[in-house]
Amino acid sequence: MTIPLPPAAADIADTLASLDALLTASTANVRNGDMVDLAGLEREVKPILDAALGLPPEQARALLPQLEQVMLALEQLSTALREVHGDKLGGTETHSTRIRAAAAYRRSEEG
Image (tube, rainbow, N blue to C red; front, side, top):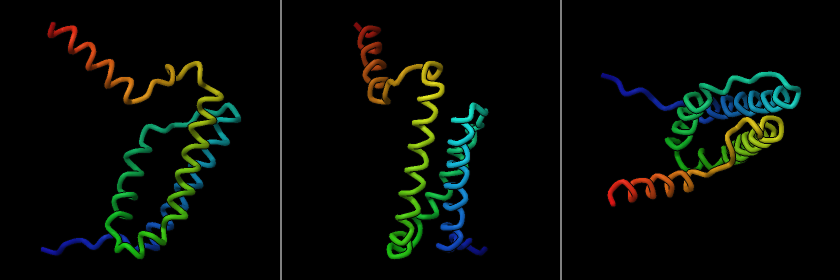
């Protein structure tokens, strides 16, 4: 049985560049009023990030500028979605707000 080797840093860098381009194009599409399918985004991104975490520290640090660029592209897409479709996104509640609400409902059910 052979253990698969993790992707090379160059392959991860190429994938991050493709992801950045996809996010940038998606932001432009949202701003132009076009539909964007983000359904599989998390499923696609997680293996890339997991692979980056599996790299030796020096190689992983070299990817930081690209990772930061991807984060910026995600933030720009998020901003565009809020600006264009904010009234349809169901509010801006945070994860912590949902957790507090769930805890409050739990207490009222127990009491």
